[in-house]
Image (tube, rainbow, N blue to C red; front, side, top):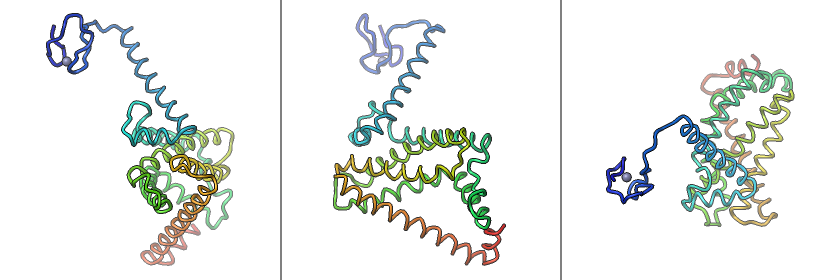
Length: 259
Ligand SMILES: [Zn+2]
């Protein structure tokens, strides 16, 4: 008997090829078999997703360390989880923009002067969300590395894996919460700060777990991280506005704000 795939000679009654892993029995493909295969593949993926999703709440250190150590079958790998989060974000944007256009409208709460600019910023941030996300992760990783510079447990790349998992996980939760909020007539203004607090606390929780820190020491580290993020955030806005001012001129900037 020869393997159907690689033509290796197999022993009688072999169930699989010892060389390439192909099935040795030939069975006709039936609709029932096709359905079984579909359910098998789908449910396996499903289980792995829920296992990864739940473990990132209870034992995020296990998900992250498993990936770093090279274990690939236990959880969804970091790139897969990130891709999944981006897919769901795209779906969220589609649902919110088409069915709940008021959700991300800031004009009701912001002062009239800045409403237009805020909406412009939100719109452009949303349409470039993927890019913004991908650009921010290496920066957040750098900040964490700086704050934990005396601890050599993780190198930059390993810490990057942790941050991609953190981003993907908080993004997935944000998608669920945003759509739920839109359904009960809340807007982004109502939940924005809550989500920001949740994301910061989750970052602190995961870093506490992977670095095995005490609550007090982690609180101080998280404060340093948040402070650095706020400084970078305002510095970026300042640089952007200065850039617009010097390149396009004062009138352009005023028009942008008062339009
Ligand atoms: Zn074979």
